Length: 121
Image (cartoon, rainbow, N blue to C red; front, side, top):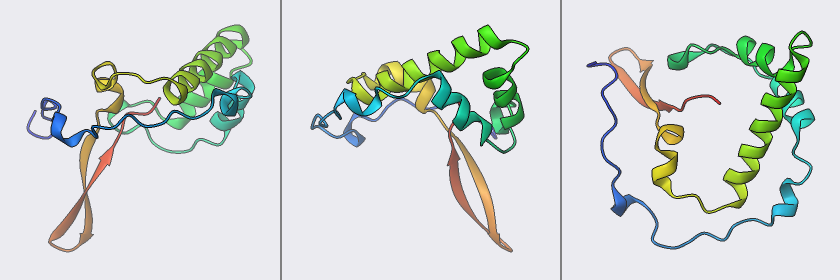
């Protein structure tokens, strides 16, 4: 628990008080399961805290064996991405999605730089 403490409460003073202008939804019309599957094929890397590596994501999203389920998952990710990019969603709904883990990066002997690794979707 020392390495990965529970996240603290949201600091509302750190949030901007203005409402950002949402992009035009037409920008995301072409985002579909095929685009998500194409992007998934380029994933590479270890799973980090989630333990879900890029290989596992590729298998879940691009599997020919589970074609119907893989297609549904890819379309669900596309729909979620569209929603996140085009709708004003309260930050309280996104707390788990935005939570990250601090990871110390060893830059020089005796010093480290913190980095945040968000969970992978």
